[in-house]
Length: 248
Image (cartoon, rainbow, N blue to C red; front, side, top):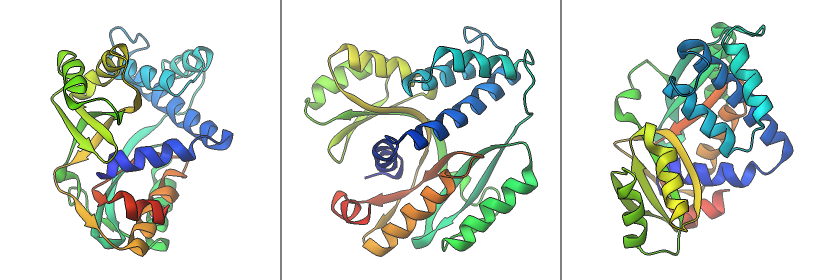
């Protein structure tokens, strides 16, 4: 299964804890601030902000918390100034990683990311060494059960590009700005959506057949995502369900 899809499932299971939910909310709040500052506080005229607001609501973030973050970004409340930096590197097994961060101190964040790569058996890469193979796409996962025709009919009508089998789920891909429209259409058709996100998808994949290597990959991704400045980690691993069940 693709890196994004399987990792999204793992994060969903691990994210049930209150601590993990609090960390997620803090990261989304930072994304809301940046989107509001760069494109204005009105989601109707700021597509980037509108997408983050939808992401926040999907994570069950309260409207008050969303509004506060938007106001901070718009300068209506005092807030930090963040910049977006993407780090590239490799996990054990040669798996490509892209690490998306928002930081108020690039020296601190760069040192921490480099340290995680070093301690967890990975290596940092020069800008562009990994990024060339990733492109932003909307990815919606539908729980297994319905037929491909049922999923495809609802997805394509909403503007999706493709529907494919991804382990026990159906993987629906679309333009990033359509991801929540596609999600809503699938749910309106009575289908169960397990995740929906605008993410970076790789054009190539690394098949991982060794359990120990799979464990190391998951550990470095978890360590990176545990960093407060890291917003997302994207990878191009392909790990079977059987190996994944053993590695988690």
